[in-house]
Length: 420
Image (cartoon, rainbow, N blue to C red):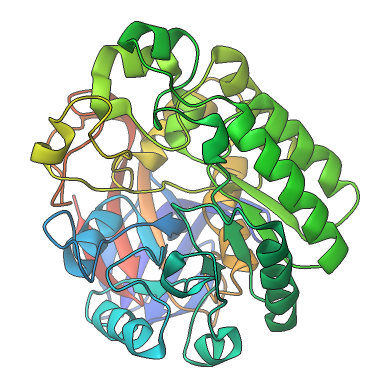
């Protein structure tokens, strides 16, 4: 048995917060009360700490199979646990892509050995080629958590519609990477001040806007549950806001880097701040924060995208896009949103626990008697420097930065999987 004493519990699912003791036995929460005393239990004194549900990230890349020099399922899970994530949903753009039951089962079986809950999406189209749909019902039966061709937009409107019609039958979410290459000369850098700085064409904001507009309309027509991934433009946020008034099947996510940084960071850090979609302008960053405040954006997801140092040392037009994010996400949320009074801790945790869990129909994201003991203990005021990473990769503009808010314990199924 494990007894967490004297912690300040915050459960966004029930909207309950306050001083509570939590007793864990056989991997489950068996009692929550103001005071619990049990002989023989291992005790964690959580005085001064927040006790929250384990974080849930529905947009991560563990690069396994196929690109394990960047990350693998084991190292990705360690990074997740260190960052407070007890459940992750992997993207399917591996090699081979997760477009078959065989590859899906490889990922899920390897994930079961990590100590956290590792789920995965399957691809929408075979080989992510945008030409032929995968066997969605078959992949759902084998355990796919959702569907996405993340990294590659589905340009054919008829194919996008057909995909949403099929996904609507499954009840699972379909997530879209919204970037039309017709508006992009060099991806990963905003067309504007940053592209001018590097002397390249960059990625125009219309690349995202046009795709979001199209896919929201199709989702509203088909009833498919849709997630607009890593939103980056103020226009995109407004399109989602208006679509949400017309249907409850519309969802959107923001990354910590998009609500923290602007294109100036790309100019300062170069390839370490190159990502798709790119960091944009301050007005876009503020629109994302407003979207988080009013519920237009209901998820925070990291888009954890590890790359090797050698890859990121290439020229700005050649280096791959993406940054790691699992180990800094909560701290960025606390520092940028909670400490600056943009969101309460309850609201931040809601977007990182029960909201993503509910969207993907996952049995996590809350603190309830009888449920799995997936818990984190947070020192929300502790400062630390982002230097050593559990991930294989270190491609982030936040390396060396002082962060506020630290994970002290991560507990998954009642077992301590990370301790500071």
